[in-house]
Length: 79
Image (tube, rainbow, N blue to C red; front, side, top):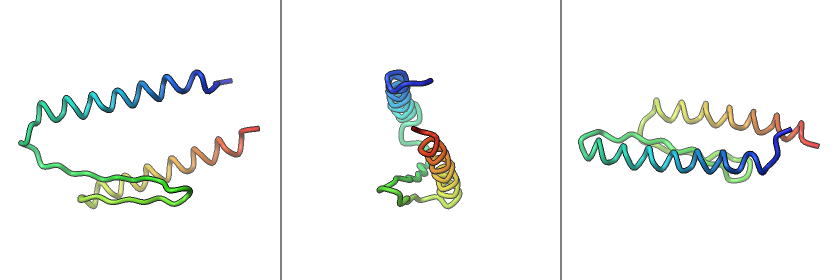
């Protein structure tokens, strides 16, 4: 059984990895690339999203749906 003490360092690792990817991406690309973004967040059970690219927004919505399904799976299985 996986405990919270095992998951927390993994989550912190992915957060730090994300910062490094953003940092090195901004250094190597500079201002030479066109930036596209899409953000999906949850306020309680309600997804909120915005972005400047229709295709990227579509993938973000699909990703949010997958996250909701996985979360429901774990909440139903938890004692």
